[in-house]
Length: 360
Ligand SMILES: [Mn+2]
Image (cartoon, rainbow, N blue to C red):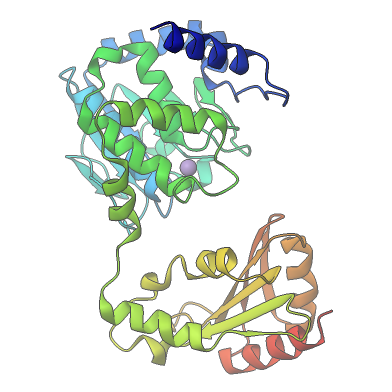
């Protein structure tokens, strides 16, 4: 007994006197508590509304779908009539979809709109046109958010919209957060953090995930369900592209490509994640994936490129690569960039190969 007590006080003492500096948790809670007045105003707007429409962004991803789905379940439990609108089709694996959702159209005329995970008006269903007098609440985590709502809860250091939404739901009414909601929220967090592995993962994210998994949500099963989304034929296609990976002499840059012929009867979406996989596994600083998109009569784009980097500025690299290829558009950030070219894919492959071979 004394032994145990001694050990316990020793551990407590140790935790309070660490020799390493403790960084402050990115405080989503603190941000929201400072916005408590607006959060309460939003809560009464929700209570007064009968019909609420939720909006997710263009090319909805796991976080956009999960946040709108989780919020739809939460609001439906209050007896609200909920509709969710995404501007275009869902092309990613999901845990759960909202009960009622539409692609680029609406049915109900809502009393309130809530946008999730969407930085700007250009990426959302044109609500100003369809519902010019309906108030909008904006819940997001993008640094580029344009604050288009009457109330904006934008926490740019949060891992995901799902993480922000979890804290908001706790402040509104924690009793209403069901296990189903927690599971969907965790799935959204896993997708935006690439299973707690990318730079968006903060100490606050681990705390939220810890709280969610304490509610008997199976972390292992959920991350497995998210990661294991391929069949044998799709993995064989990955194998084909992996066999083609080349690196330069200094092992600083690696590249591979995929053409429409490679796909046979598969969809291009099944190689989603390949460039991130290569970036995580290859020692090279830079990864380039060249893709031949489906040819449409409308588009002049014949080839697209995805760039990932660990140290080099991806955007600057894309610019010098663009000069080398010619006829390109695109842009990006410090660690990722994308480009489109009007040049045929076999020409781009040749040009990227010569660029990479000459790259120091
Ligand atoms: Mn997101």
